[in-house]
Amino acid sequence: MSLHFHTSDNVRLAYYVDQFTDPWKAADTVIMIHSAMGRAERWYAMVPPFARHFRVVRFDMRGYGNSAGPPADAPLTMDRLVQDVVELMKHVGVEQAHILGQTAGGFVGQNLAIRHPDRVKSLLLFASVPGLKNTTATGWLARIAEVGLRRFLEESIGFRFDATADPGLVKWYIDEVSKNDLTHLAKFVGLMSSLDWSGELHRIVCPTFLGIPGKDETDGTRNYGAFRASIKDLTTITYPGMPHQITDFAPDRCAADALAFLRQRFPALF
Image (cartoon, rainbow, N blue to C red; front, side, top):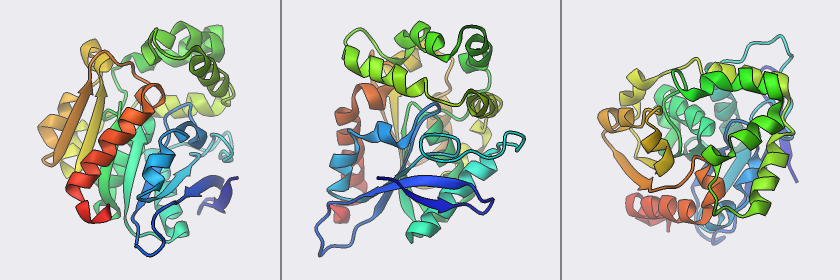
């Protein structure tokens, strides 16, 4: 069941806490931030392996899942999305956390690490680039307006999954994503497709893990190279041939690789 808190601009956000660490040991916190068109429930397969070693806090970003959205005429900004995470951390009583983000969740995580470096102990990114400006995402909204969200997802499913994916997973994914509020989705995707903060990546100073879907890298429209050029403490893993929605498609492998990175960099936590 979800818990709730109110942000400083009075938006009610839903969050979830899972922890199965040894009760006599102190545990760090991992905050999981979902993708665009996502919700906290989509982390279901990655929570168990993390929760054995960390307190896991996941939340529905404003306008998604069980969280309320701001008024339709209120602007959506990256500053506000970052502030939501800062206020969630204060609410759950943690000064510093490991931030795990898939795609747009990683966008927010990157900006948190850039603007509040003291808050981020490590950054764990999957299929996440420094903004969607000049990518194929700029055409998503026009196509959704033309054919509807479900058909758009069905048409683009080959980008998100491949033929080996469980058909039940693919159907569940389409059903879940189709529940999104289109007004908020347009605002969110519109924001992300207007931004490029690659010039600020050098300000990320925490240990950073980046999981790159092979199909994303061969496509060439997403700027993963900016991380390699700008972040000094960076570990990358490329998943050859894997599709964009990597934490849905291969959650066990993603969790194992991220935990292996944390075990190497923070051995005292295990």
